[in-house]
Length: 396
Image (cartoon, rainbow, N blue to C red; front, side, top):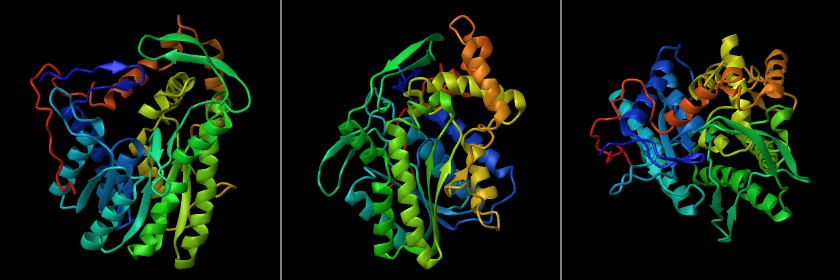
């Protein structure tokens, strides 16, 4: 079939296998061009098919030479429907890992379920013995609790009062005012249940109970804080409440893992173009302004650059990981520099529909959004007949 992008709001309903493979290879090439990392040997990435999770798996495998297990919920092609981008990304990763002689395995299913946890543990026990790094990078709008059966849905809303600020339709450049009503207490509760730390803690507990988590193991989850511009819909909204729960979970896990020489961290990362961030009002316009400033200063990073810096400079630097007063690793340090934020704030005040392409990197945002799904990848013929059905090696 001829595969072209079909988008609906912040969702692209098609993905291109060769384009996704090209994006994965670009990340691998970046990592292999850098010094090797004396890091983990056996790694589990929960939420491994896109974004920071995929980049973490690539850095572990191609930067540190680690064996990896990736858990993710993606679908293969069916009829006229392409596979998801995560499926194509994972197929490309597995093929590259096999060619490089790395052990790697994929488990596709609901990471929140007891079934997938048990399946993953059996695989680790059989193929790797134990793991020494667990990356938790799940991004899902819904969760069914494995014990109670209750289903939760997350929302992106402020807490306390109605919020209004600029936003942008990144498809056509229209800048408008988004007004968001505050969340109810139940919406806050459900968002924490989906995006907080309970499932992360369940994974670590099950891995420990099964004896497949090595002494001295590290676990890490990812978060975001951001500037004042985004606080109402992120740090001080329902997502922020969930991230506070994630922070509290990390502290509990750290205390428990320290008993066997291990550690737990939250890494606060830079704002980047992801399908999740595209869904948050205000954020796409902020990222577009941020990209312009950081690119002009020569300090822009994508997922793979951030994750290489995390592994090489923070987690496995031969010394104690540098953290902030709350014990968090801050990979958003360049984003939050005073000079960067001052310039972004100035741009923000002036942004309109008429000047958005001049005062921000909205074109770059638009391009990166479609690259998430394998489009606008250099060297790919999007007019060519393409087989959408791609198998994943080592799929369990």
